[in-house]
Length: 174
Image (tube, rainbow, N blue to C red; front, side):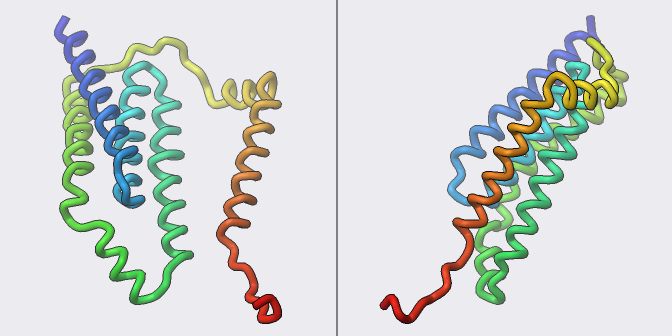
């Protein structure tokens, strides 16, 4: 009985952190602040996936969303670096108080994770799926969906390139 109530408590608190972080994510006007809440939301979703017995999905949530999205954002900031003016603007983007709420939400997740590991709360595995089974499914019956997703990502990349590129200044047109 105690394990079940602790398990439920961790699940519901993680769900509340997910909802709060996602709500804060969509209400932020600053992209850096929104990114911090996106990472917290992804981490709390990973906790939920783990509790539901989907350890692979939890690991992918952390690696792909919390890890890769942050790296992508860092690369974008580096590519758009505009010197000293940019450094001052970045410092204004993320004051110390901007870290307060994401830090609190992440600390809640950390306390939940450490307490569940110390008390031995183990998720109930619904059905164990290996990496080979995921690969076989993705490149078997779902191959068309994977290819369509890759075309969608490629078209988004091409669209972003065309939007971001600088048009050459032609003095004859003015």
